Image (tube, rainbow, N blue to C red; front, side):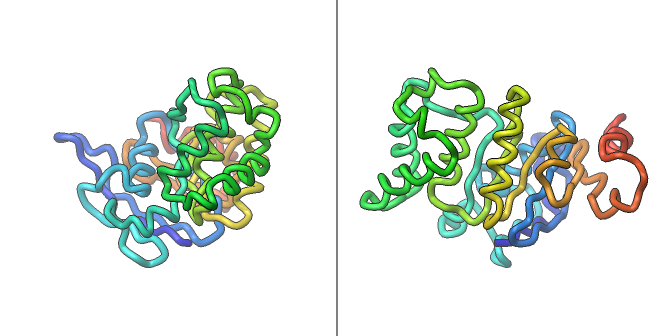
Amino acid sequence: MSIEVRNLKKVYGTQAAVNGISFSIKTGEIIGFLGPNGAGKSTTMKMITGLFSPTEGEILINGERFHPDRLDLKRDIGYLPENNPLYLDMYVKEYLLFAGSLNGINKKELDRAVESIIEKVGLSPERHKKIEQLSKGYRQRVGLAQALLHDPKILILDEPTTGLDPNQLVEIRGLIREVGKDKTILLSTHIMQEAEAVCDRVIIINKGEIVGRIDELKSGKDSLEKTFRALTQS
């Protein structure tokens, strides 16, 4: 499924967290959404998932106008927030069964769906543990499993590798590439290597405005990191 963002704006009081941005993502693309902390990445993602309503502008999902009441379109979106809100006292499978029920998965299909996603994201060795017993890397896998459980066509991943060690980084990046083979993904990060390792294209946001795109960057000789710094330093 495709995503199109048109003149999207989110204002808090007199402050524009997102200030009239536009971009599009084709079906099957993995797009890196780069920006420093506070640039507007998370706010944009929350509008795309329907958690926030835009002050102005619109979002189209596969050509249809999206808003928080469009439950049919929301079911096609999986979301991993930056601060993965897991219930630490729940067991892995218990949590995924709970998350699946909230996503409206049929009870007859729920156990099969949970078993399938546990296998897909490599959680089988940890399935009987409480989430509080898991490493940061495995907690991120639980978050990804939750986002993928209802088999969405779109994945919105907000800083999915924050706080991971080098080995965990490689594992989660590989997992994102694997699950992204048949999905449209918007992935936010402030890590350049992340974008280069995982993404097809890059959009750079700073202070609520888009300041660069990958098609502009490819023609230059500078590295992505150097270009990012030039576009986002005050």
